[in-house]
Amino acid sequence: MKLSKLQIIVLFCGVTVVFFGLSPKSLALTSSNILFKENFDSGSTSMWIPKQSHGTGTVVAEAALHGSYGLKLSTDGTVAAETKALANLGSSYTDVYARCYMKFLGLPTGYDFWNIISMLRPDWIPDVGIRLYGPSRSSANQVEFGVGYLKNGALAWLTYGPVGANRMYCIELHLKEDVTNGAVDLYIDNNHVLGDSGFGNGHSIQQVQYNLYVGNAGSPHTIYVDDIVVANTYIGAIPPASTPSVTSPPSTNQTTPPYVKTNLAAIPNDWYLTYGNGKQIIFLDSTVVRTSGKPSIRLEPHTANDMNRAREVDGIWYPIKPGDHIVAKCWMRVLTGPSTYGYPYCGARIGIDFDGYDGDGKYVILDAAQFWKAYYQGDFSRSYVRDSNGGAWQQRTIDIIVPATVGDTLNRPCVPDTMVLWMQGAPWIINPTASNVWFADAELYINP
Image (cartoon, rainbow, N blue to C red):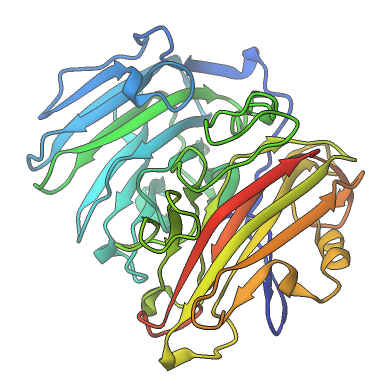
């Protein structure tokens, strides 16, 4: 389950539906819409990498987020160190979408900030840009994306978070230049998370800059950049057609067809964090294990700043079709401290999400609310563990047949074609020492 999408969050006392933005992904993107494209798989780049200021920009296999090569941008820890690469669009445009994949090998701390993407006018002045803000700049004490843009002649800012290290983000920035009807949008992992419109700027864009500018001195930092596309229409994430097939799974932890099986030993290849932020996010625990030699995943509680939020790890998205048989199993352990023993929202759970085509033919995340309501029939313990007798391991199983259609956010019938297994620790508590959650020996079977 991804952070910025419609979710059904089932609490033990009832059902709460939380809505997040969905992308307007168009299936009509063609080569005629593309203004610039670079996936670095040639081992070099068509981008201009100028002389760096206490930093380097190199195309290396280490930085590949898809394919064989990616762009590695690194700074040396000097104040105002910067490294950058620029995509020249050749001409000026007034409506530009720029998508890339990024991975941050660290994050800004304190009041530091990093500039990572900007759109430049022909005179090299940026009209919009994205920063990573250090946690001290956030009221929630978390690292956040900050989008700065020119609005009616003044600089305006929007923020969204949290942002985590060592996971891949699909980032798409949109800017429409217009004297009265300008617009700016940010999409993260194919979901619309920030936007503003109806303002004036009236310039044009000719360059898109991908950079790592570190405001304060400190340790050297590195980010990876891959699969850059700049277009005059919405681009979206790489479609599921490029997702590894079930018959050729990408992880050595998975066995041969017709099923897929994973333990919890491969992060981020099998699992990646989608919720939470801060020092203690997700751990491989080799001490508290269920099966000897197989580490568990430990999700620790939140601070008061993170209250009422869960920590979560997602698996790999797999292609599926109506009629497929899916079985997901996971062992879970919840150890609740005496200060909150019996608190109703301390627990662990597993779940499955679908992607597919909505009633307008757009590719979106499907909430499938009625399908899951019918499946659980009010018995949420089928996928939940809570207050587990001093930390005893308990297994939960989801066993479903993929329906012909499931509902989108408007409950229109849609055809699901990909799915993901997710695991969530839900210590909705104030006391950060009160509860820990472990997951072990997870299994996913498709058409067993």
